[in-house]
Image (cartoon, rainbow, N blue to C red):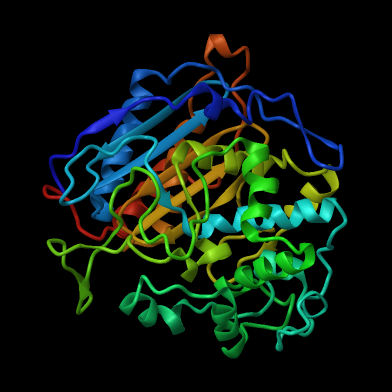
Length: 427
């Protein structure tokens, strides 16, 4: 795509600093967690900003998106938050840095944070059996709440089985129990606790279990344990009948693929849908500045006790072709020193990662989901590598940290090019 413009700016100081400027954050148990290094209030140098901006424009073009937003925060060096492109094929207004979008599987970090907060309050345990919390739902024998959160329950993912129905009738409300029942009826991916596998049904079952354990609605739990403690006003799981993305937002697209070839002149909007098809597994809406706050809290455990935070990042291998330095925790993935995840829902792909030691944080969003969330992940890792290279700013009072990333920006750029949906003209 051509003719894309760039709009750059910083979000409000309150949102950008809500995690970094807090000396400690206390959970309901009263145990304190150490904060991230304080973010220096200055932009990166011109050459760094140029590299980051070029990477954003390139990712938009390769993914066949009309626009995107990205941010990099390096406490010792600087910060960069940028938007590029248009809201859509029809709406030519520029994308802004505070635009809303569906975050897909990044919702799972929020869901597991609710679980971990309830563990801290001794309302539930990671080892509690689902069959004890929800005895009316058959087929859950041997599965624990912790396994649902870590993706090791063996419950299948329903998107392959139900994907056609989702596409044909995207505005239909889906009761969580209907998706859970479909997931439980599918062949298992393994015995409980045996191995990791994606499972939207597992995270939706976890939401039902926590509602049952507390006698409260999910919106109440999310508000008390995630949104209010972090000061988030733009993040929510919309109601099942809210088919439009709340707030200002770009259209979410997919590019049709016919006989293995993308039809780059025929992308279609798919963002109008019922979020109930993803629910507590992937139905949330947020912004890049608020995802920064969310992922920093997830990575550093600012709302949890030390004990529970350590449990949250007791990881298991992803299996398959995933490298050993990429492993799954409770509600997030550890990639080298970075913690976070990626998402794909409603025509948007996104990724958010943070290093709890150095504070290096990256968040990205693109509004064409055809390339999948792996593309967003690799784009975020490319930006992380560029951010990790930056020198310390004198104003920060910090030394440049040693951040050992088992990948380079150049390697991630090559992966993005290999996964291109539509190669830009001139390449």
